[in-house]
Amino acid sequence: GEVNECDGEFRRLPVKSLPIGLTQALLDCGGNKVEMLVDPTAEEEDQARGSVTVVLVVPLPLRASEAEAAAAEAPLVLHKPGGIALHIPQLRKAIATARARAAQLIP
Image (cartoon, rainbow, N blue to C red; front, side, top):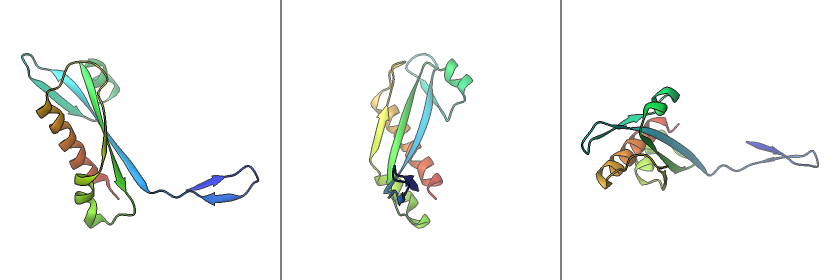
């Protein structure tokens, strides 16, 4: 991309990574069962009992053949704002789902 500086000159902005985020709505199914709905709509988020967002930071440049490995190794940020609790296996599933989706989205 380019950045317009105050003096009117343009300078390239180096992009070294691509953040890919995936939100999953948490649906309480009773007992300790929680279903995760990938990429919920606003209405679905309103009905959910919580959410979890996983953001992977994928390094660039990247060839399509490297997408799966890059998504599997990318550092991540996890955001879980309140709502129902998740157990460790459920968090692992949310992260695995985000990694699989990121591998599909990497250009």
